[in-house]
Length: 137
Image (cartoon, rainbow, N blue to C red; front, side, top):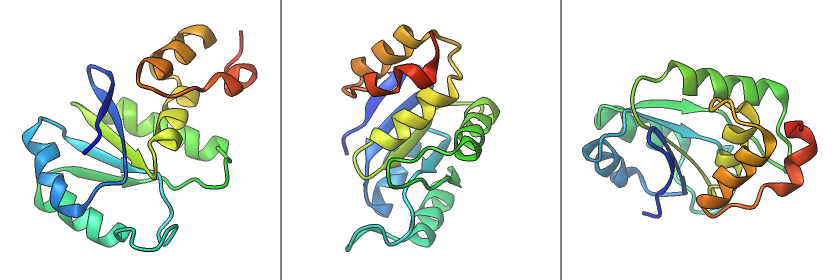
């Protein structure tokens, strides 16, 4: 599993398998956010399977799907609410991790300016400079 730590309480990852949920719990994560719609790609585990595996491992599971490069305000707000409401480390995933780090950056739960947000994402291996205008000055 390719876990990319963003900060002390947050990491992102590409798609992983339901059997790996226990690994996340063992590593100290308390919650998972899936940012993929069900059936996005052939062979992708279903949301139901991922949710059941998370619950079996003792993890909270949240589904906030986004697709097509669109990040609606409702999804950003929902992501931010989960981030602020989770007491402990959280991992968000999508196909590559890019949607997850983008939602976190747009939600800006870290309270950083645009440069800080872009730098934070870059330190995890993601270039979000195209969102500079949406992040403000």
